[in-house]
Image (cartoon, rainbow, N blue to C red; front, side, top):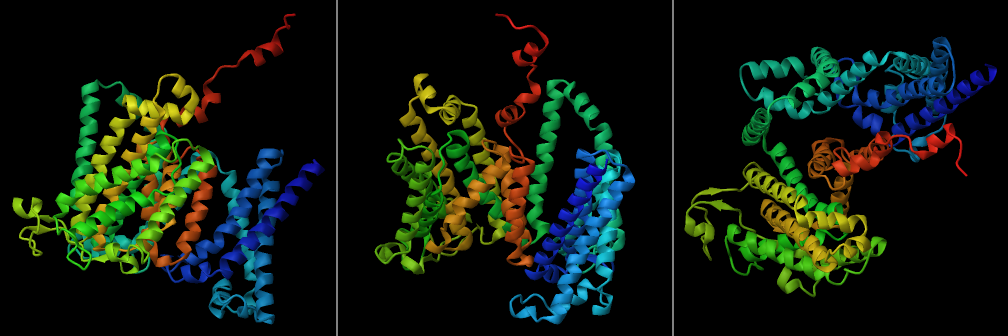
Length: 586
């Protein structure tokens, strides 16, 4: 028993010191001070306090969790271990403040400002520095008590707190939409949201609703799923179409009340979905890692720019609708051009070769060598917007610059074009996945030699993967060009390809719904949190690490990946187990 206590309190000391170091790091990089300007619950707590409290809460929770998993200790011992870890975290933070009051560390760390110190002492000055260890001990105790709660209480409470955090983060986007509409939407907006966050009533409602949904679903969700599975096929299909119809109506109405910013975010998500669906064919289905995928995106964008622009580098002044098939075809053929030299490469060699191709395209597009045709660093400007008007302007050559119909000039108009294209390409990708060609891609992904032995034409199948994936990226680049109205080589950075690879991995390799979820998580959320400046990328990376540890198969993995990851849970005990209970046969 003494050994168990010694191990438990040793972990408490370790977690406490780590929590204190993490809290100091968050202070010195400016996260606590910057986030402190944004309140989460008006009059109670800001986002800066949340970022400061989370490490202290986590120390108590992790200490109690590790001790309860690996040692037989009573609740009192776990609570004391949580208090000790929180006390050490707060003490480390208080020591940092004392050092900062004696030594001017702001010369090295600009965010170690009086505003930060005032925030850490709750506005009471350095005389109240003792409050920090006390607050740490309380938070450590709260974290340990939270771990000791039964699961039926712990899970709804955790989801409820997470609901408050999420609703508070999006308060700056939701409140203006409600306030702008007189009547009950305005009254609801003022009741739930303050100017910088949630009201106390709004936080309570968010907690109750979120935790209530978790409680109801945990008790009735499986029963509801079982009942629906027993419905006739026609009824289940009708329910699915009702769901799709509601989603379609919501998608049509969203730009009309969401504002241009949210519409532009959804357009960017849709464009990344198009690229993700293309790379999902190459990487997710066929297993061919392409780190130069942005080259196909650039081909589509430059094709639309050169053939529709009225600027200096415009060539034909065609309609956007006439150029779209050309852009897709150009990207399709460039996919074949890339695929042919790298057909015999595998693994890391293939990734490096495609990476080099993407960089070659970017450098050539921005060089003086092709500057007289592609604009060089100046780019291609004056790209015409799509026009929904008479048949002549839509399909003709040399159409007038003034649109005589409905011009898709801004994000709220191009929103429909991007979303429709994303839905259409998702349908095509689904049909390809379920086709004979899709099964051949997956066979190549698993083992090229076995696939070839079974009669799969490797050259033809790989080329089709490159070409079809490139065509989807070309369509995305074409829509991006007309959205921005100009194309520059600096927009075709390697990070575009990296982001697309990341969203496929995060969503689920080979999963078409996973591409959508990954694009929302990795493209939509950072765009929605632009107010937090460069810190959003810090959380972007942290979220990637946490997600890969918690869900290695992705947020929405394909059925094949699910079977691979959980195969050991479904197989029955094999001969190894049997051999332990039966005599060996010699």
